[in-house]
Length: 324
Ligand SMILES: Nc1nc2c(ncn2[C@@H]2O[C@H](COP(=O)(O)OP(=O)(O)OP(=O)(O)O)[C@@H](O)[C@H]2O)c(=O)[nH]1
Ligand SMILES: C[S@@+](CC[C@H](N)C(=O)[O-])C[C@H]1O[C@@H](n2cnc3c(N)ncnc32)[C@H](O)[C@@H]1O
Ligand code: SF4
Ligand code: SF4
Image 1: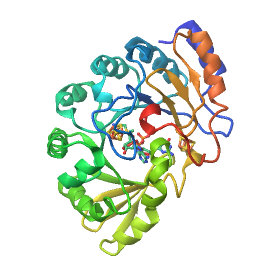
Image 2 (image 1 turned 180 degrees about the vertical axis):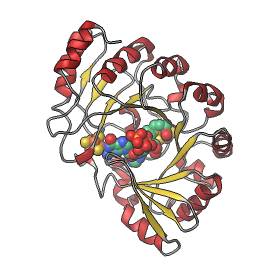
Image 3 (image 1 turned 60 degrees about the vertical axis):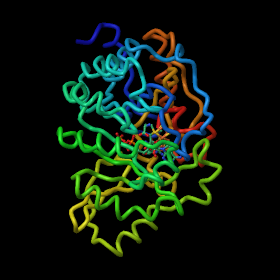
Image 4 (image 1 turned 45 degrees about the vertical axis):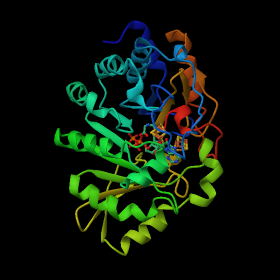
């Protein structure tokens, strides 16, 4: 039931930006902290924002509710590592009460087992899990962590419980590009999706991206020498373009460098300390911390003018700082 005030807002504001793109997805970063240190994302000596600057569970709920009334359909919880957030379940429970079409979670999977039951009960059934190597030594090199078996075990448990799982693999030349065939077989064996991500020029990764970048088209060409690929349809605001292989594996490519998808971008992002941004690759945003509903209405209007039409080439902040 809309309050009179929020009804008035809903009548004057719709989430359509200045280029006609409808904002229907919000990615919420719950923390910038992480228990891994993926070499393209976070330096080993990363510094983090103070925990007392985090938005509180009630604030997430209030903001999300307003945006739902304006047309928001999906929320994805991300970070940093969202499952490190102490009050993760309270936040997830509050968001799950809203009339959303979907809530997803993007996680490194290390603590996933602790939350599977609750996530299932809350209707959060879409899990995107980062996994850049199936080889323990290589996994350690990339993430500075030795949790490969744990993560694989959690992926297996989640799949057995019925969760929809997409694996995100950032493919890097000379680091893990020799493993893409193994990932296709892994996806097939577990009946899960795998998406190959291009290494993005964002934050810390800008230093090494030039040498390690490998395009989706190059990967596709390589995979086509082993598999016959049939294209799959996807929503127009999908980050990935997808195929099914003749062995039955579902694979996708997120080519945010070589084939940007800004023209159909439908996402806003909310950082752990409450900065709402119209684009992953823009530093500027609007702080929603300590604001009233009336104030936020103006900030939402500002945001509708802040999403770039063309993809910015790079940005100094890292993915974990803004919410990947
Ligand atoms: N350029 C760009 N890349 C994005 C954006 N959103 C996600 N990505 C890329 O896609 C990767 C995977 O994102 P996920 O968290 O798995 O989400 P997704 O499944 O792609 O997104 P939804 O379908 O919206 O839930 C990220 O790590 C980024 O590399 C975006 O808005 N812009
Ligand atoms: C920042 S993480 C946050 C969620 C969680 N910690 C995880 O790893 O899934 C979200 C996604 O961003 C991706 N990512 C981080 N830095 C990236 C970069 N420079 N290029 C491409 N993807 C990147 C990760 O691979 C991961 O799939
Ligand atoms: S990609 Fe995810 S798991 Fe890896 S360091 Fe960044 S936030 Fe942590
Ligand atoms: S770069 Fe910005 S505008 Fe383009 S798809 Fe990503 S978030 Fe959207």
